[in-house]
Amino acid sequence: MNKQVLNIGGKLYLVHRTISEAQVRGNIDAVKAWCEMLKCDRVFNNKGFFYLVTDIIDIDYEQSDQTFI
Image (cartoon, rainbow, N blue to C red; front, side):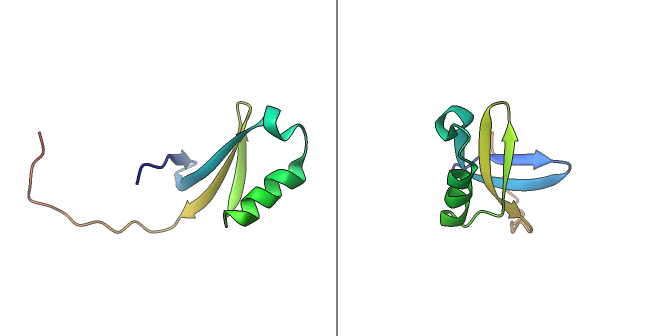
């Protein structure tokens, strides 16, 4: 999995899609429709792009004894 993760205010969000403001042309209902279709939790707007994201609530990981160089 190669998805972008945003850290905003110490909270993590998984980015499912970015849409430029130019593509939307002021049609916020289209952004909301994308958000619903992708089952996203929220949308952030930053530097000319809408970021459709889901909240990362818990991270499962295993500690490994292997060292990677």
